Length: 339
Image 1 (cartoon, rainbow, N blue to C red):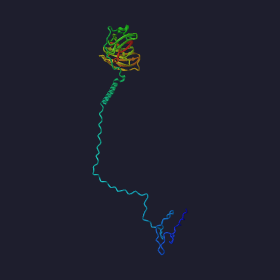
Image 2 (image 1 turned 60 degrees about the horizontal axis):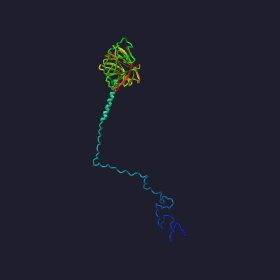
Image 3 (image 1 turned 180 degrees about the horizontal axis):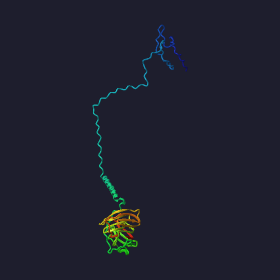
């Protein structure tokens, strides 16, 4: 297959027609004035550079145009005018007031009672410390009453001061007639010594008296105490009917000096606690005028001033006071009285 030759370029006018003008714009026919110059130029062929339109001959250039190109980027449109809104003819919506605070719940009666009890305990403790003072903690607060002296039928006479009386086993054997036991004391003699028992039902101190016809204004008592259980063992001086002073050491390691009045009622005048309990104790209870001293195992424990109304000694004694609701017992030996 064959293709015809392409037409010549630029295209030729039909046969018998004049040739295209060699230049653009076209020229007027012969004898006609020239076309006025146009500010526009024909678009160049595709791929040709674009040139600005040329002014007519004799002109230097187009006058400036009154049109200004828009600014870029464009500015924001002017703000719309603001107009005040008329006040609303309707009332403001109702806002309820805040609820009132809830009342405080009532205090528990149990809480108030507990607080009252605690306050009472604190004040009671402070009061107890004030009463005890320098004597230390109160011990063995339950004190049995003391009985009246029960002398022997024939009191033993004394002579000059000295170790006027001694008994390896007091109130037993050859010394039995020198002593007299109170009704509240249960006694038993053995080679180890005199065992005294104070029953739990006893209302008065278990006591065994040494009766002499006279006593000096100053004297001392010594005794060895062993096997002490559930009570306080000691000795008494200045026994006059129900009155007297007793010095004790107790099974729980405490000690006390008790004054008994004319009715037999006792009150602690000194008390405290030993550093440790011992299986046995050597007691010394010494009266010198109105000064009364207690020594335990040859260690000074306490001394007190005797009440001025306690001046007579009708008897001295071995004593035992039981703890509450329990029987007490102790074994006494190597007793001596020195005046």
